[in-house]
Length: 209
Image 1 (cartoon, helix red, strand yellow):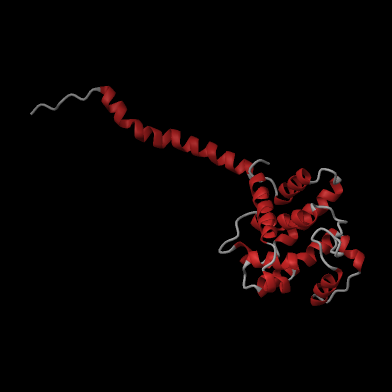
Image 2 (cartoon, helix red, strand yellow):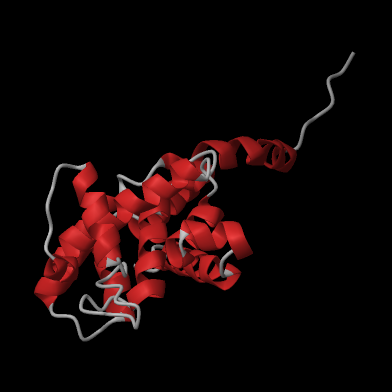
């Protein structure tokens, strides 16, 4: 029985998928991988710094450096329950940045009418109470120092997360209005939404740095 002749162009067409798989796909995948890696290859502290710079351009380079390193360090202390099931890269830093932006707009000497102080707007009595848990003593003016203020703020947030069984929304409402107010009238829902909005802004900005 004679074998049918197979035209060369049919062989070429049939081999295209294999050619793509062996040559084109690896190159395309490499380019995509490099692009994705490039977006997130900057250190977290640098991405935090650039976000804060965009929100408060008046800060000096020294202030930006201290604040970004402090946010990076202290955000790692936030309990994982704040993320739900799993904490994605930058999620806890974004949450902390969202709180600071909502509370003080990154102004370290911010003071409210009720005398809440510093970046995370901590009441002096609450600050002393939190510090005592850790065997520390602070002065009122210490709440204007970024490292002290943010450390105490994160400790307090973790306490509220534990009190509210890991419910980050309730913990944020209690942080803003006080635990008693949340029990009585539920707090201010817009506060939590503002924090989450700041968190999303930071996570989105990481893609552009």
